[in-house]
Length: 159
Image (cartoon, rainbow, N blue to C red):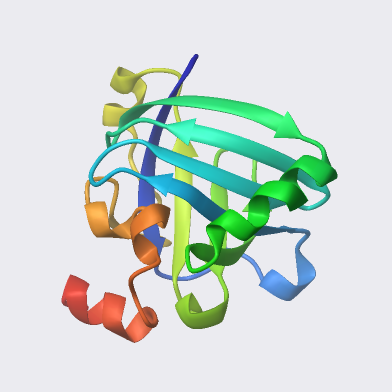
């Protein structure tokens, strides 16, 4: 069992040119989603495959993850039809930046992970980060599936 302690922010402006910086393509789909509860997710991250179970929560959540073979992933993947998203992940020393694709193109979210809740609470975000969305439930990946585009999300956020 591992605890995931992270804060999430929309990105005002990118601190780099995306096409020139290395990234990992990610596709993920959900096998099970309890309303406001646990989720069971499949993820292909580059050439690696994972099954993840996450608990309910915002800043702090329980997370269980196991690596799968490609064959295991491929056998389970059809169970995610209608509950999938794609993004590119850019890895930095202090944070991860996700740039969404498909109908979520335009959405850019930075995630910063912390060792404990106190460290997370004392974090001061740099200017290039925008609005904090850690506690906005509809911006969790599991809930982004319901939106038909970044424009709809912007309207929902009042941007």
